[in-house]
Image 1 (tube, rainbow, N blue to C red):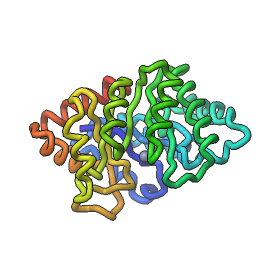
Image 2 (cartoon, helix red, strand yellow):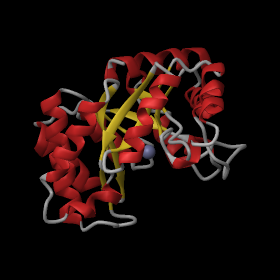
Image 3 (cartoon, helix red, strand yellow):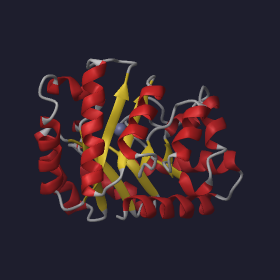
Length: 259
Ligand SMILES: [Zn+2]
């Protein structure tokens, strides 16, 4: 079992990090991908301690669309910032999370677009996959992905909450689709419908911890061990044995991230 997206370098885990990682390993997790905010030096610094405690941990590094606004007028700097963090962490395996978020709109759209594009180009230069966050920005996200890649994207749509059309078009680009605790929520019916139909070899599961704790722990701090709850519901709605789902999503993670 693998948690393909968590934020273990977040402040939320500072106090009991060793216990959190201990529970993840006890739950059968062989790997996890920890997202680091490239613009937050504290998180990059914590990556060293994290990797020392859990050598199988791998990292995705990027500037989130919520944080893109700080690069307004100097967008090209995002490449320098992300490249420096990637270069300082031997376990870095991906660029992300990157993308567009029009729900909160914390940064002007044009700045979000440019920061997203530049990080896609960096990922292609470094030959690593991308982790894409998209919210209420499906058409622009797909347009930028197509324009920047020529139609083949090595990457994942993370914490999928989008439309069936977004899933189909992301799959057509060659992407993986990752589901979080939302599949366990009573109001997650639309997400469950999409999750039931994703080809087995493109499916990933994640916690997005400390956010989005699955039921029955909804509202609490989430942690990587609870990815098993996501996997249980995914297995049930796809009508496959849990063991098969765990094995398949682990193989998919290995194929995409080469951990
Ligand atoms: Zn995340």
